[in-house]
Length: 310
Image (cartoon, rainbow, N blue to C red; front, side, top):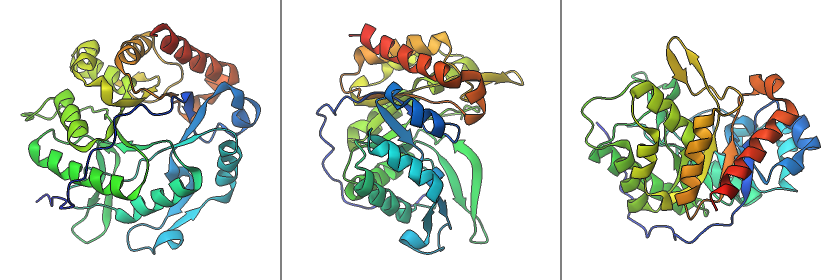
């Protein structure tokens, strides 16, 4: 049974435009040298906070006793934070888990926000953590899509409010990639995203490569999908590359963005009045393919698409 969050509703976050940061990159372990030598190439750095600490898990202590920072990686982050804004893009909240809501993790994000002053922060509209029958937590190993129905909408809306109440900066959720299409959904994905953002004031981190991936694998028009979204809720956009595996296109962050992703980006930025950042993602294993010049080309292309959309 899903346990609904019972926190009292709060007013939605203001819809005023955020400070427009520009174009950034998502941190990965291949980037420290690039950040030291080519920091001028990006306007901000997005980080997955879970890459900068070890987590002893639920019941493994509180605060600093549970989340222990990895000194070498935090040192790189502090060097960048002295020169550029830092955005938190978490992967561990698992906001769609039916029987688990990790409030200690929210407290850790609040501590990091006090330290780095994120202009906004985000997580994924998905789940990957489940409570096992023996009391131990189970990890799915990937972000699993949530069903688009009223019960899940109410569950996640309550949790969004809990995050908003504790972390004093706008909160975004990212649309998920999925490889199995759940049958008999009560809502389409755009309808679910529109209702969730409208009813909570949560912003949308629109990953256009996820949209492209889902469109290829499930046979829908990605431009029609974008047209169904309330683009006034989009604060950040992710762009990335992918590749095929066993007859399926995957969101592998495999190097440069394909041309259709740039086309989708242009469509989004033309209709997203609150857009404040475009983030390029790539997996660390593709750094030899890209190199510093390849990363710069992707960031410059993102700026060109944004500028062309006016």
